[in-house]
Each structure stands twice: as C-alpha cells, then as structure tokens.
Length: 409
Image 1 (cartoon, helix red, strand yellow):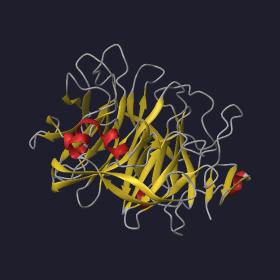
Image 2 (cartoon, helix red, strand yellow):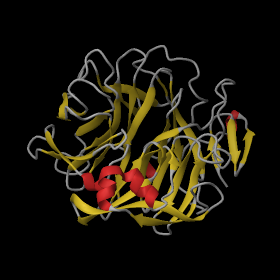
Image 3 (cartoon, helix red, strand yellow):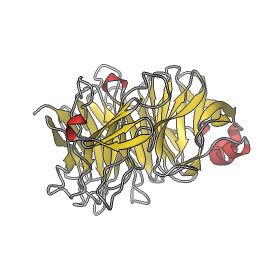
Image 4 (cartoon, helix red, strand yellow):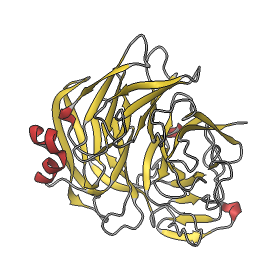
C-alpha cells in the first residue's frame, strides 16, 4: 500500500483519490521531518532570491550566486549538480558544482565554494569542455564529472591535497562516450552512469583495479524478462566492446540489445538499490518515473510513478502532481529525494520500500520553485542532514545560484 502526502491529495495503491487536508500526513520525524506543502507554486515568487515554497519551520538562503562568482559574464552560469568533499580531514567544508554551459568562452567548468568562509572559485575548466553536468565524490578523494552532449567525455579531477579548491582533470574514456548526467558508485568502487538522451541506457563500469578508472569493463543494463511496464523486470549486465564504447557507448549498447529509456537523467545509490530518474515518458507512460534497480536480485521496478503511488499533474487546472523527475538525492533515513524538470519544479520525498513490493511506500511534497523561468537542479545532502542543497538554473532575474533549504529558523 502506498500513500501520498500532498495536502489535499492522496494515492492508495494505484488509485488516485482526493483527501481532506487534515489527512495529509507529514514525512516521518528526523533531521528533515516536515509537513507537506499545500501544492505546487503555480503563482510566481515575488522574490527570486527566495523563490522556493518550503514547509513550515524551514528557511532558504543563498550559498553562492553570480554576485560571488560570475564565471560567464553576460549569461547564466547554469549551476547544475553538487557534491561536497565527503571524506578526508575537512570533509563537508567544500561544495563543488558543475556548470551546464554550452559553447561559452573559456569552456565548461567546475566551481567550488568554501562553506566556512563563503569564498568561491573555479576548481577546473577546459577550453574545449561543454555542458559539464554530473558530479560525484570518490572514496579516493577525486571528482568525477561528464559532458551532457552526444559523445560526451568523462573526466576525473584530481584535487590538490593541500588546497582542494584547485584540481587537474584527466579524461577517462574507458567509462564511455555518451551524454553524461547521473554518476554514482557502489561500495566496491564500480561506477554507474547514464546516457541522458532519449533512448539512452544505464551503464556499469568495473575498473580493473579499484580506484583506477583508466581501464576496466563497461556494461549496459539489459532487461531479459520484461515486467508489467516498459523497462522493468529481470535484467543482466551486458558486456560492451570497450574500444567501441570509448568512441560511442550508445552504439555499443545498441549492439548488445541493451534497454533504452526515455531520458535517464540521474542516478542515486542507496544500499544495494540503484535509483534512476527517467524524465520523459517511456512506452505506456505519461509523466516520467523513477526506477528502482535491485542489484542483488537483478530486478527493475517502478519506484515512483503516476498511477502507482504518485498523483498526475494538470498544470492548466493547477492540480499538483508528479511530472518529469530529473535529479535524485539520498536524504536522512535513506529516503529518496526527487526534483522535477518542469515548471514549477517540485521536490518530492519517497520513503523506502519497506513492504518489498518494488515501489515507495509513501510520497510527500517538500518544496516547489516559484521562479517559473528557472529549473531546480542538483539536490544534494552533504554532511549536515538538516541542509538540502539545490540550484536555481537559468533564473528569471539572471542570477543563477546554489541555495540551501534548512530546518529551523
């Protein structure tokens, strides 16, 4: 049985029904416990530097914006994805962000802000880089980033051990050339990536030696026993031709019959489950969905989907619903946080699948973006479980920014 907490909306199993506001249960207690907001921000925000509708008891603040660091004068800086330095002596102090700028003078970039001092700078930039998107912190204290273009490259940024605001990028072609966005890892050091474009696949890279991404084997997910909806069911990892994948991972995946999805944009690993945000509508779908890929059982299921445990959105009628999931983050209590790629961008929280039926037990609406020309991106929790980082990309006031939504006044 699944429940949805959107004040005034409820879903039970695959049935959508209206409920009284008093029946909208809040998310479980904990560092980010909250009562769901009443609905999407269909009315535009008055203050675009405080554009989020957030639950009672929460506040929003700018972490870094184009007043602090203007990498691309005269245009948006396109803050995209975030991570902190998750390990090491100063873990959690530095927040790294990619910038999804295309064809800009100076090339694509990765920036960093010192969360203690507020000082911001460019940590790495390439004159021939473009649309730098996903980012991930490795256990060996480097950054993984990729380009979201056809045949996009994958880079590892080695940070200066004495000054983690400076780094040197090394290309890692063995991970595959594709439209990179989501990047995550498992406990064994394997890297998971996606081809973000329509029909793209989900990949697993197994390095020959842990911590060395220069060589290894690249696989693509292939559903072998289809389930009740497209792209679900039992799966295997199909080995790709490494040389071919380094030139064109999509062609290499197609050659082995790998499963393609409607824009698999982001990935998040929680325990032994890999979550994938499918932004557009796959066959038989209408609004995008989040998949749960059980790596132990080798089974793909729909974790969040309209008609299963999420309400359908009707923008014209101002009816709040789940639409175009984009970025994912693990939050306190192993809950999955989801942000949408639409207007207004909503932030949802999905509870774990405790009854083991494949889908989230509960779904709650946490926040909504009132800057209607912008997109919310890069949701992420660092070392503080009471702080959610989220970006405002291509903002209506021309000031792209990283924001923090925090519990407490």
